[in-house]
Length: 182
Image (cartoon, rainbow, N blue to C red; front, side, top):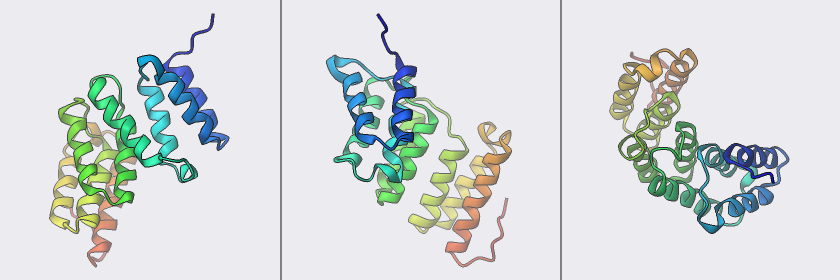
């Protein structure tokens, strides 16, 4: 009788992640998605978290699996399959992989296809991608300014602090004196 749901699978995948048993988590993922069953946002977020951690480096096909999870979920369940947290982790991972076009594409799909609002985590990745990875300080400043005017960010003190830290990193990258213009 017990039929696991999205939350159950997410808890199991998170437990595997904490136990550093990524192979088991990937097996659970594949079991959940066999026979056209679709994972929900909790399970997707748990898998993205697992695959973007440094402890998952040994998983065969890690990058491809992460991209497949994101792409398939965007295509099949754009309105209810993903969370801003999953996007933030995937975008940050892609930035570290050096795939800046993918970072920007995920940000665009998040708002246009999935209709999710940008939050401080997403803005942080966009600021650092523009200012450091793309070496475009003006674009980073534009993202920073947009973030500070967003209702999704202004009520989150720690999120605002993350944005200032991102701009400090951008400015340091450009040889500035560690000031941020708001």
